[in-house]
Amino acid sequence: MTEIEQHRLKKLERLRARGECAYPHRTQRSHSITSALQAFSDALADGANPQDSGVRATLCGRLRSVRTMGKLAFAHVEDGGGRIQLLLRADVLGKERLKQFEADYDLGDIVQAEGTLLRTRTGETTLNTSALRMLAKSISPLPAAKEVDEDGERKVYSAFDNAEARYRERYADLAVNEPVREIFRTRARVVRALRAFLDEHDFLEVETPVLQPIYGGAAARPFSTHHNQLHQDLFLRISFELYLKRLLVGGFERVYEIGRDFRNEGVSLTHNPEFTQLEFYCAYADYQDVMRLTEQMVAYVAQQVTGGTTVTYQGQQLDFKPPWARISLREAVAEHSGIDYGEHPTTDGLVAVMREKGHNQMQAVTRGKLIEGLFSHYVEPKLVQPTFVYDFPRDVSPLAKATENDADIVERFEVFIGGLELCNAFTELNDPLDQEQRFLQMGRDYSKDSGDAHPMDNDYLQAMRYGMPPNGGFGMGVDRLVMLLTDQRSIREVILFPHLRAKE
Image (cartoon, rainbow, N blue to C red):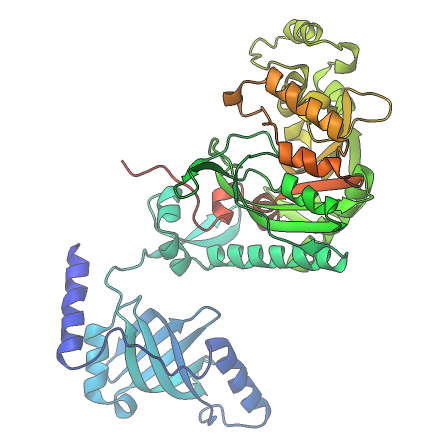
């Protein structure tokens, strides 16, 4: 332990020596700080004396500041919703108790204070404390907070050495950083608004298996595990898709799920191996219907969470108000790269023209992957305002229905906002014979270790053979939506406990 921690342990020993329990079983809290402040305000409105309101409260919270002044002391305590000043006077609390407070209580301790609310001469609402006790002695001091001026905006951050230290001790980060706590309050409001919108549109919230015998629904490497009793290898799901679409076969017409997906892939500013996904499926709809629903839903969430449809993200104004821009993938790539891939229908032909343009780092094995590479390099960073990019190559979209005019193009869209891919959606393939051929083709075109192969799922095909209604499906990374609405560049800032490398 550090010298400070050893010093605090001695204070803990003194508390116990005089019979105080430093970690009691129960508290007697009568009000949250917010409700106590409201009760005081109501009393004043009814004509109560500000210096003797008669409003008694027992409050609990963490000590944030202490200032001693001889026969009295001022302190601030903070709970999950508010902050209030304590007045500790020797003639009210007792001389001996005030000395004990000054000697043995530290910043970061969680305390219970009982007293009457009043307003000081400086106008601050204060608890005139008549009783004080320890609820949890803080052995390790919390990191000190510091103010930082970022582009003219004052923000308060804890004095961790770096961002990774904050993520490793998120509990301490949250304890000292109100802006960080507000991010996660916003995240909760986002999820609540998503549910409200979908519930209002007659979607049924469901739960599907996290452990799956066959992974599918996305192009990603899974995490694998083993069930000992069943002697069965299982996978953490990479998507909800195939199970949700089974429910359409079963007669549910509109279903959604908000939950965790797991992908055994890299970590970056926009990727975490464990992340929160929203997926919904709507019978008798196509990708055009899903486009309209998507822009309505995201605009609704922005309105509910921020009070409007315009937000600032990384210095740029984003407007979520429908309708959003729409552009085909072919048009977008041609406009920004100068390559019209529609004029080069073979993989070799597209490789040749890309080399003419100076693209020498091409590892893709299919034409669709080459097109995706062009798009991510030239187009994605330039899509700032909400934009639907639609009609993708068939060979990178094994679960989407082909367009009516071109069997090599599927009815799929992705949404990009602020340079981030936010969501992905299809007119879902519901022909079981076509779907089986797609699975076989993916197995031929991609190696098992590439992360792009889609395993054959015979049970899903069996479900389709019973008859799956035409439908539109949608998947969105909830973490990325939170990033956009809280102006965070890194996904780690919006995940409470992001995945990190083990400490050296």
